[in-house]
Image (cartoon, rainbow, N blue to C red):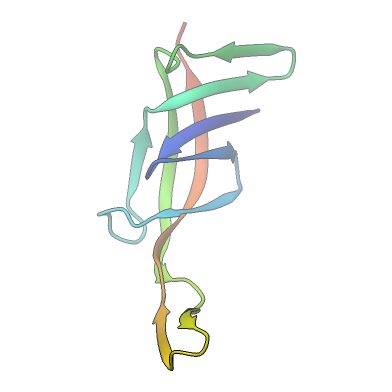
Length: 105
């Protein structure tokens, strides 16, 4: 069983027992909450597609970690003009453990 959820402007495939890294959310570590922005739920042969969301569906998740991703380097330059700019960036993320996927019909 899996579901496609939307959070932080992106879509993620959520399976029970798996972890997903999403944009930073304002929850504490070990706090549980429901995500109700579910776009699709699949359970074996039964697939429910939302228009745009599946009514009555929710995904129960628990926050495992609040952290920062790997550092990326943004380097801009223009040849022959002595223009160079170097900047680093680390994106904040929230690691979620999918505990349950429920669908009320």
